[in-house]
Image (cartoon, rainbow, N blue to C red; front, top):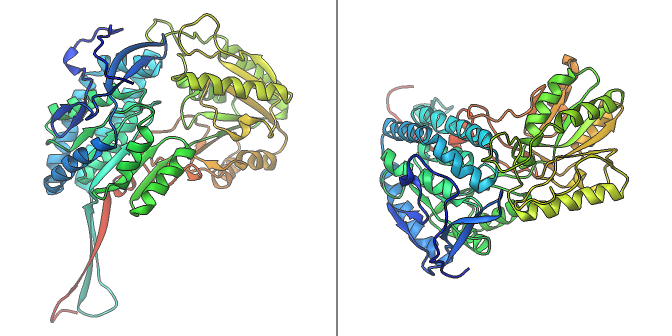
Length: 502
């Protein structure tokens, strides 16, 4: 897109308008792209552009990495308590800006205001948690088999980290990554998604106000067109030592390939296609409550959402009816409108993919018992909450992560069949099981192939529990005790020979 000198009408009023910035943040400065090009940020609920940001290119990467590296040389020596205090201050400022941030988040992602508040509360869990982790980084000491020797390990920050973040939870994903990095003593360059750059820039402004030194937190915005080349340049820059990516499995494989060249340390949090299994001895109301929150949150656009819902034959029809009755009560509308309980999908691409999945299922014999297409007569990217029954394994929904408000119900007879179907995917992020049989629940924990198992529980993501998948859902852990900070640390072994001891 060409240089845009146009002015935009803000679709909301902020209590603190000084929070808003529309340029990238490098070092301690708000900067343009070298090309001068900008791209527009669009409200998914009205299909209206309301801001523009710099479309940074490959040529903008080196200055940002140099700024982050220069800051790292000092920041890595900062006392852990000082790092914790900066994180606490940042946390407090984000909480203070909660209502303004929620407005911005809703107009970038489309999610209802109640969900935006929910994301901010979830996200500040990370700043709070990692403030505590900063002072709990420990090495070890041991006595080896050789006499008069002692072996130590010390933990040190790895260096400049690059964070490539998605548009579905843009505040939470930045704070989950940056919180761990800052606690460890690393500096960071965030490349936000083209759909959601403004929230990252607000976080940068608040990090600056919290007292983080120049260059510790940097944000490079860019458009869809420049995202692949900019991301590749970040991954391949010799001074970037760590890359953390949340997004699709397809792109995750490209990131891993870029990072393989320099053998960079990588954390990948990729696609889900998560199964949700309801056995006939489950508390159906409990299962339904958890499914409603998990499935329709952000119009189905979460990596841990329930993609395939497996219901035991004896309760299948009853559960489908219960789900339909509850889902019919959802109010679809602009996220900022009072009473809205489900917003639009975030991109027009999301609408096309959802429709293609419904049409494919219909063609192969599924029944559409609710919804089934875009909401007619709406300006934004609205898709009806859709329920499909009579699903089979050969349908697209079974293989592809949906990322739209589509609940697909599969019938099963036996536990063995449920586990086989649930595991029949290349991904392994989360799996959910609902049963009141304790033996079966333990078997679910051990037999389901996923990094996280919800046991009579839907969304379980929280700062204190390790988050991450197996198989093609990626590797590495984010959040949780020690594991998350370890992703930003190296372990160094020291062997000391002493005299006259033992």
